[in-house]
Image (cartoon, rainbow, N blue to C red; front, side, top):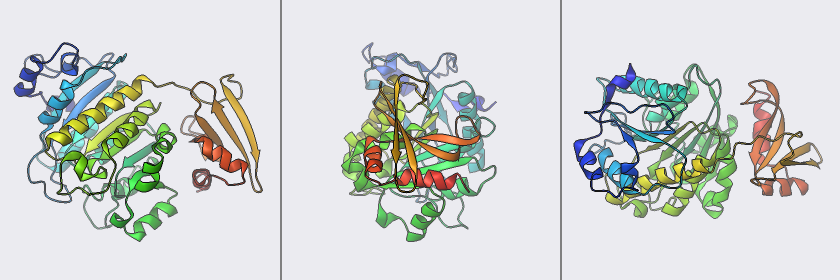
Amino acid sequence: MAFDFLVPVSKKVLAHCELLPPQAIGNNIQIHTKKDGLPVLANATFALLGVNESRNAFEMKPQPLDIGGIRLAFYKLFMGNWNATLVDLGDINEGETVEDTYFVVKEVVAGLLEEKVIPIIIGATQDITYSTYRAFDGIRDLVELVAIDSRFDFGADEELISSHSYMSKIITDKPNNLYNFTNIGYQGYYNAQEEVDLMERLFFEAYRLGEVAADITMTEPVLRNANLISLDMRAIKGAEVGLETSFSPNGFDGKEICAIARYAGISDYVNVFGIYECENSPLAFQLVAQIIWYFMEGHNYRVPEFPSEKNDNFTKFNVPTETEQLTFFKSDVTERWWVEVPSVVSLHTKTHSNALLPCTEQDYLDACNQIIPERWFKAYKKGFN
C-alpha cells in the first residue's frame, strides 16, 4: 500500500507544537507520528503532504527543500472559524527512481480522492503535477488543470519530464483525460512564441501577469471549474520571498497570490492543490503557510450551486448578438455568473450537450455590446473537435 511509504513528521516539528498556543493549527491538526502512526482519514477535509523529490528539476537544486520549515510556519498560524478537519500525512521521500516517487504520489493522491479528502501538496519541483494528474485515472474521466505559473512548461518534444516540461507529458500521455488547461500569470518573455501558438491551437486559456494583477477577481471564474491546481512559487516576485536565484523581479505579490489561493478554495470542484518550486527561505516558508491558510479559508466559504431555469436562486438573461444568442445565468445568492455554451462535453453529466461556463459580469456587459467573450469562443470551438 502506497501509504506505507509515508514518512512521519519529524520530532523537531512535533516538539515545536508543544510550545504553541492551543488555538494554533499545530495543536488542532492530526499528525502522522512515529509513535501513533497515520491519522484516520474518516471525516478529514484536507491532508497535508510533502514530496521530497527534485531529481527532475530543470535546474539542479542546491539543497533539499526544508518541508519541516514550512510546517513550522504553518503550524504557528491560528485556526480560522472553519468547519474542517486537517490531517498531516508526513512526507514522501525519494524512491529508488523518480518513477518510483511518481508512482507513490499517484497512489497516495488517488487514495485521498477516493476518500473525498483534498490533498494539499508541498513539492520541491512542479513535475509532481504530472503524478497528481494521473491520480485521477479511473476516478474522473475529464480533468480541468489550472497552473499559476510564469511559464507554460511545455518544453521540447524530446526532453524528459522536468519542472519545465511536465505539461508536454500531460498533453501526450495516455489516457488523455485533460479537458482544459489554463495558465494564470504567464510572463511573455519566458515563453517562446511556439508555446503561445500551441496554447491557441489547443484552445487552452492563458492570462498574462499584468492582466491578472490589474483585476485579481478575474481569476475566480477561471478557477471555479478547476479540479487540479498547480502553483509554481516562481510566479511570485523574488522580493516577496526573499530570494533572487531562480526567481524573477516581476510576479505576483503576497496579497495577490493569497487572494488567488482563496478563490481556489472557494471553487466547488478543486480536488487537489499543489504548491511547488519553493526555496529555503524563512520569508518563503511564511508565504507558503499563508497561501495554504487562505486556500482553507476559501473552502470554508464554498457555496455549492449550479444554474438552472428551475432554480429560483438564479436569474436568466438572453442576449442576442449578430452571430449567436447567448444565455447567461446570475446567482442571486453569490452574484456569480455563468454563460451557456452549446454542444460541448459537460464535465458534470459527461454527455455531449449544453454546458455552463463560469464567467464575469463584464462578460455579460460585453455581450450586451455585441462583444462575445473569448472564453466562450474557445469552449465553443473545443466542443466541435
